[in-house]
Length: 58
Image 1: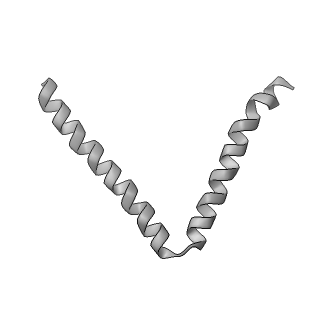
Image 2: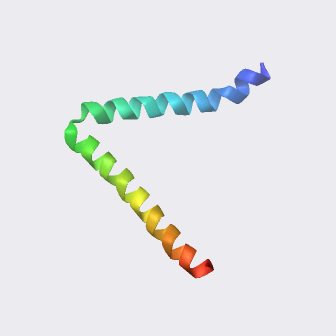
């Protein structure tokens, strides 16, 4: 019983995330483009911050 009590929250979170993805895909291409753009921007900022911090500590 304790195992299922611990697994309850991660399962609910995973189900909610799946519903959010399905709603976004059904929302049209603009939603998908915005999501891909946000992820790309975050990756670019991580790379820039890595280079800046590397120069300070190097």
